[in-house]
Length: 453
Image 1 (spheres, rainbow, N blue to C red):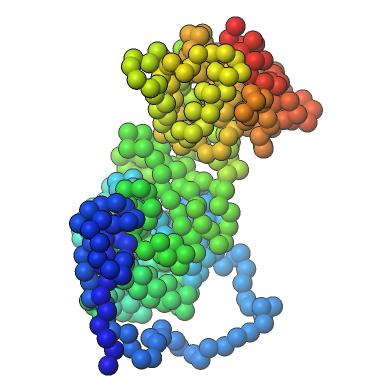
Image 2 (cartoon, one colour):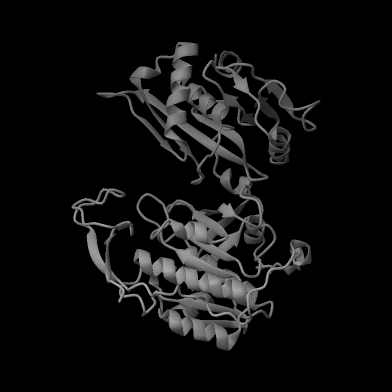
C-alpha cells in the first residue's frame, strides 16, 4: 500500500517545500507554510487517455504548415504569436492584477467566435452572467462563443469532449481543481496536475488552449515555475495602472519570435489596438522644458519614440537618491557616474529622478544617450531642441556607440516631424532620411558642447 505523503506550501508565493519552516526561503514571508496531504502514488504511472496506440513516424512525414495557424483577429496578438494560434499549443497569459488579462482573453474569444470558430471560455472567478455583461460592454461576440462557469477539471474535460471547441480559454488556471488531489485550488500540486492534464488533452485533440495565470509580488507567475516550462508560449501583459498603454510581450514562444510586442490602449469599452504608438506616447510632450529628451527605441521590430524626463536637484540630506521609473536603476546610476567622471559635473551631491512618459519600461541600452542628454539639460537648466531625436549607447569611458536598427528608428522619427538626430558615428550607411540632419556624437563631451554649453 502506498504511503501518504505530505507537502508544505507557501500561501504567499505558492512554492512547495518538503519540511516545515517558520519563514519561506523563496519569498521571505513568515508563518506562511501550510501542510497539504498528497494523494498516494499508484504503483503504475497514470496515463492520459488516448484514442489510438502510440505511433512514431519519420519527421518528413509529419504534416505541418504555417497555414494551420488560427488567426485570432487581433493583429497585435497575432504579431506577438508569430501569425496566430498553433493547434495543440498551450499559452500562458500573465500579468499584474487588474492589468487587463481577462479582457484580453475575452476579446480574443470574441474575434475567434466571429469567424465561426467555436471558443469555449471557462471562468473560475466570475459567473457566466458577469462575463456576458463584460462582453456586451467591450464588443459583440459571435454565436460560437460558449461560456462555462466552474472550477472542476472533470466537468471541463467532459465539456471539451461534448462541444469540440476550436479554441479553449481558462480564466484562471489557479482556480481549477481536480477532485482526486486532496489539496486546495491554486496549490502547487493542483496547478501542476491540472495544467498537465489540460495540455495533454489539447495536444491529443489538437486545439490551442489559453490559460490566464496570476503573478506574485515579485512579478513571477504564481504556483510552480515548472508551469512556464510546460506551456509553449508565455505572454506577459504589462502596463502602469495610471496609464492607458498596455504592452503584450512574449517571454517564451516555441512557434515564433520573442522580440515582437503588441501595443494596446485600455479604454472604457475594452482594449484598442494602437496603430501609431509613437504618436500616442508623444501626444503630450513638453519638449521646451529643461530635462526632456526624446529617445528612439525598438520594441521587437517596431520603432517607438518615447519622452524621457530627468529632474536633477541638490540632495536635501543624506545620500543622494537615484529614483527611476521605467528605467533600469543600475543604468541610471552608471550614467550619473560617467557624467560626473568624464564631464566633471557634481552629480554626487544631487538627487536624480528619471521617468519614461507613458508607462513604457525601457529594455536595453539604446536610450542611454537620451537619458544622459535629459540629465545634462536638467542640471544646467537649459532646454534641448524640440525636434531632435537621440539613439545611442553610452560606455563607461563616455563614448557613444551605435545601436541596431538606427535607420529604422530615424525613419520613424522623420515621419513624426523630427528634423535632427544625435547618433553614434557609423550608425547608418550613407545619408539619413530626407530632410533630417544627422549629428554624430562621439562622446558625451561633444553632446554637452553642441546642445548644452
